[in-house]
Image (cartoon, rainbow, N blue to C red):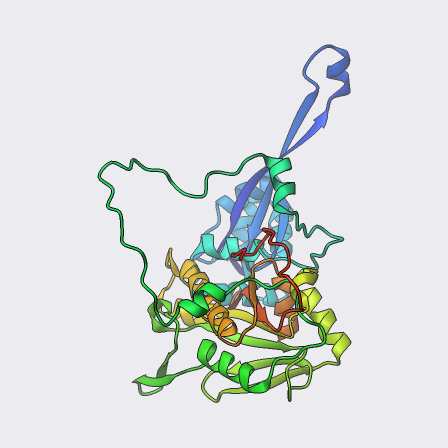
Length: 386
């Protein structure tokens, strides 16, 4: 049997503080610190505590070159190597560790930049809700807790500044100035099918398909995309869309159709929205929601192990969400976009692999309830307040 280290591995020193009562009684410092090492490996999707001996063995293993297991055992001990294989931090070319090796090979084949793979994997949420840690403090509560925030703009020296003329009117003004984040959606209202169709097609649909090779195509959309690859897929959770049964769908950007993934009743759709949006009730009531999922395998096909590739993927989602906002405003509806989502749970719902797909954000829209707009508050994950 041959072994090697997994493709991406980071080791972090963690410190735990405790009160040393013996020291307190002796008149010394009350705090005692203990340190341990934690291994972070994206293909495993969990944190693993490792010992000093295991740390040394991992440091001595190559992530590329296979080595005889017996040779490693002779140097670091059979028990140490066996545990690292069991954890999946070392991979082997034989059973019974085939599943771990396949996950490691998936990560290698997707061409992630290691730091981006780490941030993506360990920045995902599971089962976060108002009961398990989802916070939504008002701006006033944030002021009381943290004090004044940094100023809203940089104040650089004004000497020699050029005063610009007033901004002239334009065709986009109505949508730009009417656009706002909705938090009081009408539970009795629905989105007309023709409105949903226009919104999906103009925001996420292919306006043109261009062949760039015998079996390669790129899409022309209304928003820009890193490398012209348009790796963001739109999955639709329909709660109240006229002519569309409640459920989860994939929007096909070329065929311009909703392809059903899971049928739901109204209560199930509402519960799924709450689960997806980490219990953000003020957003979950929107009748139409769109899950923005980046296909890393498409983006990283061009940007292999690239420092900016993951950032470009997030920017793509941002471009699409703003286009979505403006189209919703055109239709007379408020919209929202949020990154405060249970992305790991969404992956499970959609049957996605987090190494090949990155759930980036969720946006939604729908008619607002009658009356004044909900009081504006800055909430975690949201990128716009008004």
